[in-house]
Figure 1 (cartoon, rainbow, N blue to C red):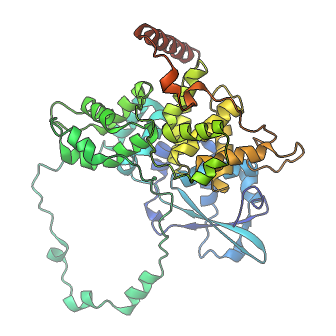
Figure 2: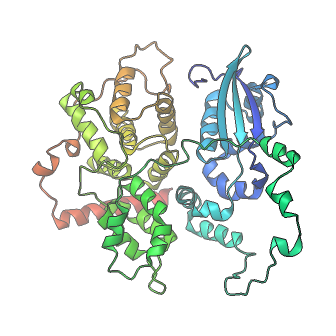
Figure 3: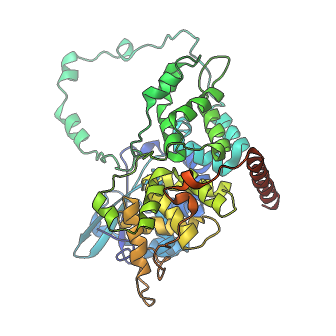
Length: 457
């Protein structure tokens, strides 16, 4: 298997093929909907790959990655990061093999979604909204429906197939050999293992019970179930909190949940959303007791903190301890990372801890997050314990070792023994609660900093 750190080089071969559904691809949708999220390098890589599609592709006709690097004027690391973004958004699927000539990567180009499918996708639509802003987002949606007409209230008079064409029933039930053989020639790729988000522990039945006394259309709630569970996964919002947010986003005229409004409310108010249940496990992988026994007490407390907080809440709490606040850019970085469906929330939290505490960074930066995430993904990190051991192992490497995975967190010391107060197990029992006046003062300071940053940015 091709490993970026060891085998993917400018000389590694590649081949480009098209999905059997690629006839649905739209350049207009790619530019309008995908490009703001992809960025210039990933967009350029997609079109460079598309330019290298040939009829009847075979492995022996491979091309070296040097061709792509020269065309795009980037290095192999930048190419890999662009490829990962294309994969995350479902535009490219990558497959690897080897033969006597060396390693080969087969890039299978996928079609774009329709505008409606893109908007209906919870993660993609939120990323697009964050990238281009509400005004541009609304304009894009308006342009997409500009030529549509609501025919639901009209009488349907369209004739069926058999009203116009008459085919012998025997010909339909017993297809000619030519047709059956032609169908077998199409290659249908298996589902991508990352196409489905990790299962959450959100109790949707409880949510329906909490809203049962409210004038809310239950059918609409059921149709938006994936959105609700995705928002729970990203923000760690529990069932009672979600019920309150849904009531705020429900129209008083038709009693239906406005999914678009729910996204906006959650995005705008997540800093006030707190999780009272510190034992919440979200969709984290279970950790064996033997794994924890090998860690120090402080390290065990750190693991528990990573398992107990949602990524947004973890970042927010850590930033408050540092007398800072979460920026909209950091929220976007987390959404982008979670949207790739690589890690459970506990692992994402350990990544946040590493960057802010171990590396001493003031904020999360996309390049560093992507670099470490790439390394951890290739190392198949599944739990925060495995992530912690990865950090410690790299911390033990010698100064002259330049081949550390990820290339950006070598020569680091082991995890700091001093944890933030909030990460300690007895934190809630020992800390005195802030007074309403102190809370109001803190909120005012954060809002002042946010407005100042907005003016400067």
